[in-house]
Length: 236
Image (cartoon, rainbow, N blue to C red; front, side):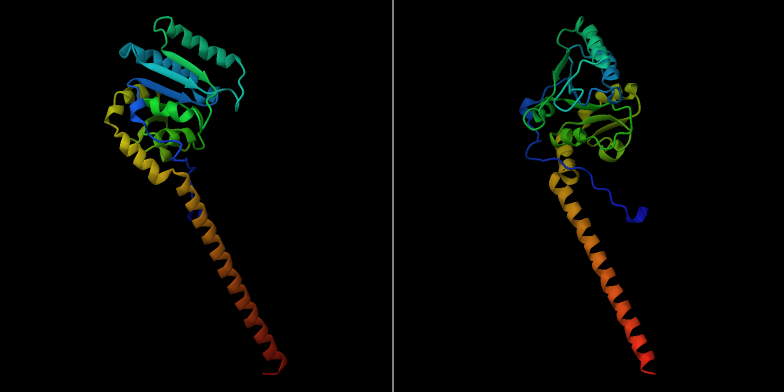
């Protein structure tokens, strides 16, 4: 079964998500995702306090909502905001909450501005399309190695795969070693929507060819069986 299994990564439109270095900010960390505890937003804000200790002018943008196009002020959301307000009392404007971000119209601009995109998911992330979207914009990703992340992020090439927030903090200073053009080139090779479609077509073609081969073999088998039965009835 494993030998017959093929993995097709999700794809991103490279005409919607692409680099714009003239928009790039020097110390902006971006996160976007569902406001659930498993996405790690609260832990991210707490870790950002340590970033401010070394980079007082750094900025954290936390985008997203509790649902697609909707948002509820849940106890968890209030907890995240409270932690952010505590930081802003000492560093005004250091945390931004843009709320729900329109996928095609607004989201690319946030990736294009960001110095780093971070994905601090605390659960087995099934893919994380935002990681591929960040790479499409030439933005390195620092992500926890949960679920598919080690398959998506090329450690040291398109970002860094980490196992703790302490490791993530150390990775921030290593981001300058990442070549943004190489991040985009890697994306183009692995995660475009066209590549995804071509992979599906290739698999469908292989399945059809296998079925046709099986049908031909079945017909051949029936023909042989019929000929043998005919010979017995004829007394041959």
